[in-house]
Figure 1 (cartoon, rainbow, N blue to C red):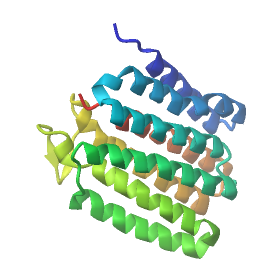
Figure 2: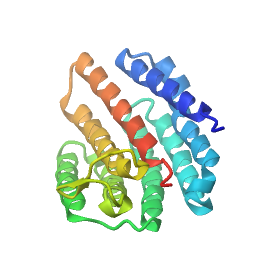
Figure 3: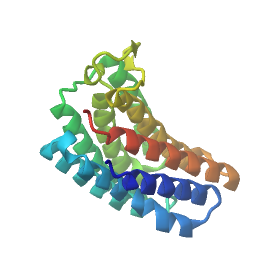
Length: 227
């Protein structure tokens, strides 16, 4: 019998975290958000034979770094915490990239080109509008682009449908890595958009809730075992 408590903890923590962001209840987020990555790490540990010892270790280490980043970003409007959080998440993305490289993933143009263009545009925007954040966030963007490009390689999900070079999710867990990578890219893109362009409290709350929901979905999909 498979123990499902990690998934249940993750689902409850996600719901409370997103609701806390949407309603500006920081106390809810302080309780729930630090549980997201540890719940997924518990799932990885439970399924470690399916991951293999090396990949399980890389994923658990990546999720430990994600926990640090999640705590730092409990206050997303604090630039110092945002920069430190970006460093923690860069460690996480480097771990994910190593996992997908071990699985045979390689960069493909349909995944790499749009991410490269988006990274260059965001980096240029930050240099003009937020020079203090340009270096840490641009550095993080490179690790994000590398990991999500590798996770989008169709070779990871042989037999799944591919449309314009991108895998369409199906019943094979491996086919969902590309969608998880897309969610991560959108989530982090929204962080920049929220900071630079949104001003009203309502739109900022809605954006933060969307950021956290897509982030949680990405983490869940990218840390699934491949077999």
